[in-house]
Length: 83
Image (cartoon, rainbow, N blue to C red; front, side, top):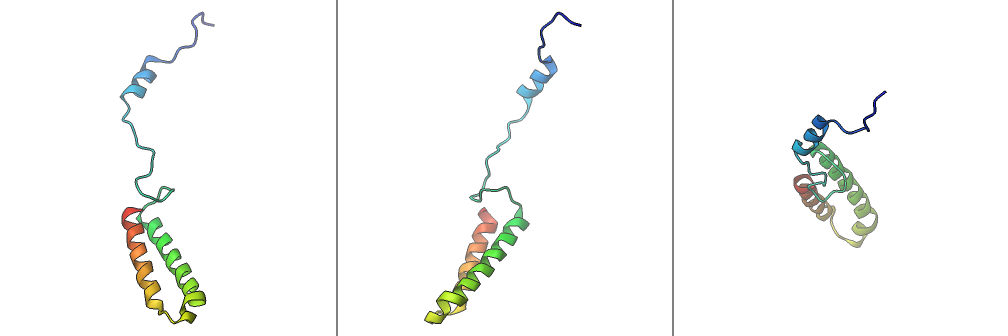
């Protein structure tokens, strides 16, 4: 075969040095990589869960469901914009 030890190709070394560095850390506060539709879906699921929790535990105390809806809408806005 060959008497030369295995060395990486020069072109492979150049590609590694010249390749643009990518940022692998997520930009938002969510621990997963998402697009806008994923964040919208997550917001809707949270809205439903908050509404069910509100109907079961909070509304019998006399507080309106509109408080939960306003809270869920504000949280959805934050998740979709910054998540």
